[in-house]
Image (cartoon, rainbow, N blue to C red):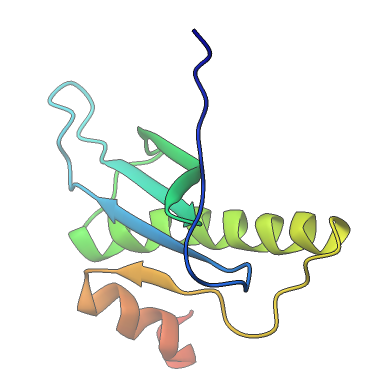
Length: 113
């Protein structure tokens, strides 16, 4: 018996969405947060990561922002590889974040330094 992943859909356009989320300080030993992201294209997962963050986040906003940064790197990599395959992306690649404070920080440059 052969097993396979089948991606499909009604859209002919090749596009993808990325979702990210983080806990805050869920590691009882270190106080570090767990963050992860999932990239979906054609109804199936094509990229993902879930790991303990390298530093202790001081807030849920910081934990979410750190994982959003990693997810954004994945988006850039995915856009580049799709372009190499002859499938350039003509528009934004959505990054879904459920933390309004992290979204606000990413949209307002006065929050940086």
